Image: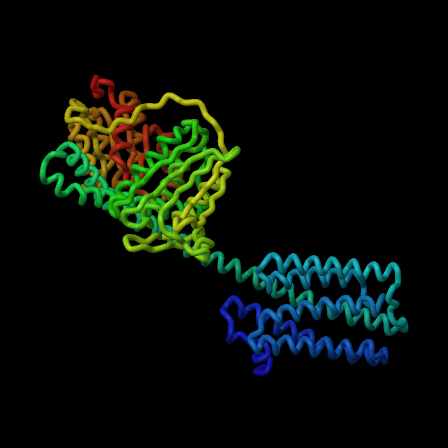
Length: 578
């Protein structure tokens, strides 16, 4: 048994755990083959005293032992190739030499099961497996052509010898087939066990990520919200000396908040890909220039950290195209923010848009070069670059490529004149202008005068941030920490609009919404949900809440500009100044 273990494990010391299993299978199979060849070879030689049988059998047996030696020397690829090559040549040789002594049906089954299944156990690359399959087809064609035309005549065998050889070869091939099927089933069982373990790990990781990101998004929402509130105050008091002093710091704070939000959202979008629940493309008229300028504005805070200027070179005569605005904004924003982050201090990022035949070309250029070796890996997940000011998670470009593919486009990266250029193409589809609601974000002190706004969140800081925003417009804020309190406050105070969290103790946002909508007098009360659930993007939470009667849904951290636009859309007309 000790010798058998040495033979079976020869070469495993040089390999990783998955490779060890393959080596053990090859060594075991090689040893089994050599033993059967020597035993059957002795029987065959006793039946037919011919060197045409003796020498090939010796070569085949010694060749199989050489496979074990190759593995022992750490030459795993050579051992694998030798194993299949010897079996391949031997199958062809014995089929032609022995003729009817080897049933062709058994040979076919042997080749298909032994060599094909064996190749799946040994080779992971599809090209290697396809090569083996083609080689088997060629071998079968050659043997059948030779049988039909008789180019090479099989040796003459006595009927008794032929019968014994047929029994021996059939038994030997069945032994090989059973061995491979047994190992193949073991591999399937192992993979199923690994899958079960992986699913448990993924479920644990998902629960951990959900909780961690929920906890992360809550303070991030507060930080980003307070930064936006301070920026509103700065804009209203531009002339004050203190505002000039803290203005750069506020821009940096907003930039950090924006960057943190992008990183969190990119990680969650990657989890959507892994869950198989990515974006559904919804085509509509998109004002392309406004879309790009919006992305430029989103990156201006990060640009302020490095004094980077963003320039737009818009060469399309059309302003409106047919596309998915949300997906397009994600693509442009990812590329723009990436170019800004890795641009040289005081440099310039140029966004060019032009028509290229039946496509639209978007080109984002910044100073600096990326080596060809790094360019090849940039679109792989978790591959990132670092610079003097920030580092990446390695997720943004991978997501960008996925999104562009959804829009039936393509992307490439190259260097030119000491600049790095990301260039992507999407199909050009002209669209007619649609009536759009003008977005105005200049909240005045009487914007929401006389309005009651019910704010529901179990986190005190989140309530405070939204309260500060709505009270700046003159609204009266009603604060609750869960859905049960909110339902009672709604019945008593009859608010003009409700802004609520989704996940809360006692009664969550969804249950609050359902109970509220069941009351006829509150069937039309504007209801906005702001969720901190990290996984709602692919758990259909937003769709379920909107179907249940919510008027809008936001993810934390959210933008006050978006909240303002939604409030103006749903609040009574009296809140809008003439």
